[in-house]
Every structure is written in C-alpha cells, then in structure tokens.
Length: 295
Image 1 (cartoon, rainbow, N blue to C red):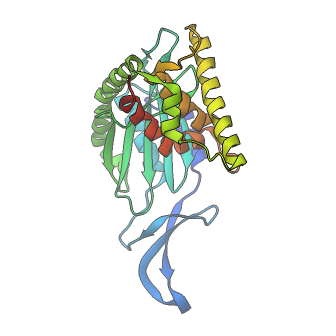
Image 2 (cartoon, rainbow, N blue to C red):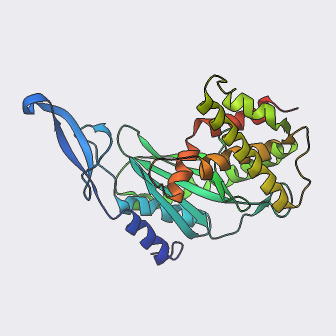
Image 3 (cartoon, helix red, strand yellow):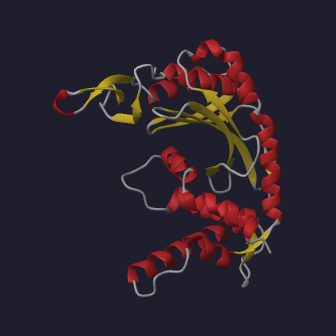
C-alpha cells in the first residue's frame, strides 16, 4: 500500500467484493457445445454481465483496488469509498484533498466524487467519472452535459502493472471538475418555473385513473417539499407563489427525490440508490430541462 489509499479504504473494497467472478462454458439444448461463456459469482453462482468469448479474462477485486489507488494518487489521496455491485463493480471515491465549491451561498457546499465503473460482459472498457456530493441534501450525482468528466479505461486484467497510465487518466478529470463547477454556477443563474418543469418532466396524470392521480400528486408534493426544506437550510427566501426557482434547485430537488425518496424493490443500500439515480432517465431529462425551460 503506497499511503495514498489507506489500509482501511483497501479493506473496505476487499470486504465489499470478497468474491471472484469466474468464466464457465455455456451449452445449448441437450448439452450442445457453444463458443460462448458465462460469468458467475463464486459466492452465489449468480450470472453477471452478458455472454463472452473464450478469450475474455474477467477482472478481479485487486484490479478494482488498483483503479481506486490510481484515483487516489491522482487526487491527493482517497479518504473513503462507497461500493456497489451490479453486473460489475461500482466505487465512489472521496478524495482526501479538499476541492470545495459553493453554489447558492456558503452553506451550499459541493465536493468531487470519483465514480469508478468496472462492468463485466460486453462492455469493452472501465470508466472513471467525476461527479459531486452535495452536503445540503446528501445527493451524489453526475452532470452529463459537462465535457471532460469521464475517461475510458481499457478493460484488461493485471491493472496494477499499468498504474502510471491509470494515474494519468484519473488526473485528467481534475479539469472536468473545474468544468463541472462552472456548469453548476450556470444552472444556478438560470430560472425555471417549477410547475412547468415537473409537468414537462413527468407529464400530466391520467384523470380517469385514481392511482395515477395519487402517485402524481404525492411525487409532486415530495419534490416541492424537498426544495422548500433545502431553501430553509440555506437561509434563503421561501418559495414564492409563481414557483420560480433556479435550475440548480430544480435539478437537485428531482435528483434528490429519485435518489432518496422513490420506492425501490427490496432494501437497496445507499450506494445502490446513488447508482440507480445516476442511471435514471428522469434525472438525465431534468438536467436537459434546466436549459430548455430557462426563462
């Protein structure tokens, strides 16, 4: 361990991913041989990712840890990590060095998070992305319209032997963080009418369907209540009758609802909710609407 990633962080990664992913041949009807292989977890025999060829080499937990170490090296250290597994490894790295940014006022602090994706199966590469964590609402998200916030990393085994290359790749994301903070400030400058924003995002309820009306009303109330609570914590004026808010507020109210409040099957972990929200179509659309509906 090189000191950039503490033993505690390394142990968190190893304990979260304390299994191997192994490759086994796939057969057709009546045991017919095929050229395809499946990937299976060693602890649960769960099939992960898609079918692969004989040449495919699954990456390991140590490969993922090498990515975490490289991210820490490039950003001054890794103070903590959050993990999740779904057809691959997801790790959110909290850099040790402070990169604080205020958006609305000094109480609205955002911090960078490096999100590592290491999927199995058909995807040909890993990726590292810079997103943000917002203290006010515990939202962790990424903005997709920002250049320089994602780098592709070739999917291969034995990543520890490529540390210099990996460190360089993660280092490139520092410019992406600067771009990201500029976009956050621009979103704060834009104004949208929240009622129009939510209607455009979710549409109108089916008035003939009582369940549809109730779900639509409950969702709208939850998003508006979240925004009002956040304004109170920031010490800014309460929501006015015309429902004009900043694009930054509108985006975070929707993103926060999807991450924290929307109903999910089972009992997903906090990091699972982060990943699900990052991939949510409504969150992606909300980012676009900040620009499309700006007054």
